[in-house]
Length: 493
RNA sequence: GGCAUCGUGGCCGAGUGGCUAGGCACAGCUCUGCAAAAGCUUGUACAGCGGUUCGAAUCCGCUCGAUGCCUCCA
Image (tube, rainbow, N blue to C red):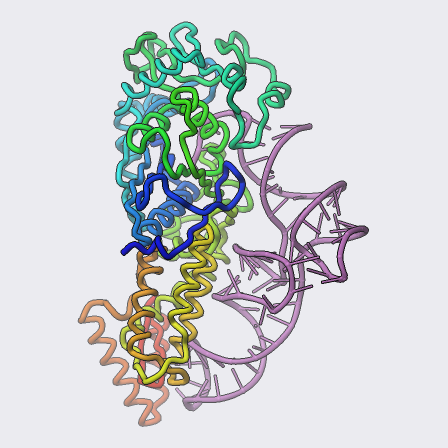
């Protein structure tokens, strides 16, 4: 199924600041690179949002029938605390703090990262390379950049020469900055800086004797700079120019700007056709951040064990909540917003659960084909999931009306509706059906059927004391009875 | 200080030069033994001030406010 031939997808390119028609470099194929986490601590919910956004994008490309190679790296070395001379590698710092091997730090938080993303139903990327696994590639690129004259070596470290690069390239084109402005606004240089210019950035850092994470290089023992790993790994697995590069908005500058500079200095080509940036998740109106402590961890939401939220929320509800906002918009997390999403989620799932048993008729009051295209139009407009969800609720309304026999649907339309709903909710949005009720254990269903039967007998006998007791006690247990035209159903949650 | 983004009804959140997104909450009605669920109906809006236009919440300018980046961050 090559749906992409019929669907006109547009994506917002941060480089041009415009929505552009998406045309892959190689017909039918998409190469996509997303900056992964630095595994020195647990991922917080803000981190998850970015990966969830790109997971949805990955899923939609696949849904459209593209062959997608999705590369998302693990940064397990080279990410400095700061750019100054006393800059310390984040992993190494944590290892020292916890008195364990750096690779133990990496292992622990990589496992946490994978577990967390799995809970939110993220698909694994096609390739998940690590920085430490690509030291040789990084050294090769440094050599190349040195040879082309865009870098210089000082005392065992190699720095990228931004000023020289800017002579015949444009440093700052992604983030809308001008080098002259940056230089004019630079704060005082910290004491004995090796860099010729504060805007220069490290490609290779010399390892001090006490530094554990070190690799041999032509410039002595050291470790690679943070920006370089992404260039090395994206080039290796996707080529010198590839379709999509994604990441959080906060990486636009300097990280992505530096990636462009490194690639252009080395290959002479612009590395990426479409730059996509996911916006931040805020908490109390402020960006979530590991360093400031303004954050919430996925486990705290799922368990309800936190001071911010009134209750626990399932991963599917959290994902639904995120999908209700556009990936390029700032989204603020709050208890009210999550509660509203949970109710909406339950309504959507109730509809999905009853879709299969929907009675069909001779005609349809609901133009399923037109509705289906509206869903695609929403996604084609830069992955507009909030609009898609609005359309999904339109279907919910129709399904409920059909259930009440106020509207009708043909078998053919029902089949199309069912497959479209399933595709968009489960495959594209990646929202799992964690609402119980239909597909639970037989024992529970049996017990519930019995209780419903007893209650209905009591009601028939006008013994409302008994019938209300059954209903109220079940409500207290979190089980809701729903009296419909065709009898009583229940839902849990 | 520089660069960028944003300011939508009670809350969350789309969109856009003229044709009420959607979810949640609220109100009325239908259904019900009463509820719940579901459905129907309705209300509340585009930060402020100017300008462009037949017409702007949507374009332009200014003011105010918020956030992000400029130092590690998804």
